[in-house]
Length: 266
Image 1: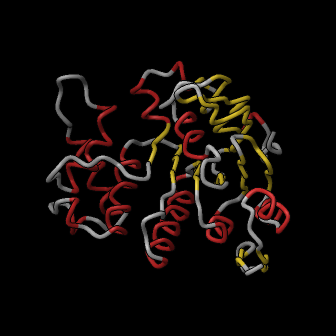
Image 2 (image 1 turned 90 degrees about the horizontal axis):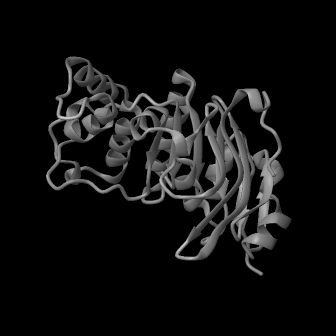
Image 3 (image 1 turned 180 degrees about the vertical axis):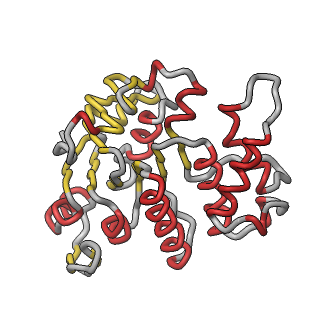
């Protein structure tokens, strides 16, 4: 089980107990406990196949699971789909984008939970989209097709759609996996700024350990579907932990914002 986040259970935006997920009969996530305080950034790391993305999707209510997941004290599996979308927004690794869709129309999809069935978007919905485009410096791209943008630009659009939902919890599944180092930093700095400005709670999965450690308040290391370590980046990113669970030899170097992980030859 992870250490209790500052503020304890009363301040938990996300509270997960004994989360267990099977896919096609295979045990992928095995009894995971996790707590994320409101306004906190927690990043889940682990080797390929550790269950990171599956756990994140279960927390979002997108997969069946055993155990309990509470979002601001409400069981995610009892939330109506619209209420869930107003509570938690998810940015997946490879979102499905309808062909020829413009940036504005894609971000407008984030307002779907607020539009009545068979209804149309309101002036307020359009205003929210415009505000998010402005906040993420995307107004100039509003009429552009999403498939004409660069990777970093598209990632900002995916975030804009998530933010248009008005949710206070943001789940990010490998948000920088397809980006070069410059765009990685741009996107993560943007998320961190928005977190501070809007009191967002961030739960993310990431592969790049040094980058993850620079931005997360706390980290959770999954291995074979179970929590192998949890705590601050300094507590989790140790040579012993990474050698055991990643089977890699590394050197840990103190950095300005967190430990830096450098792979070394045997």
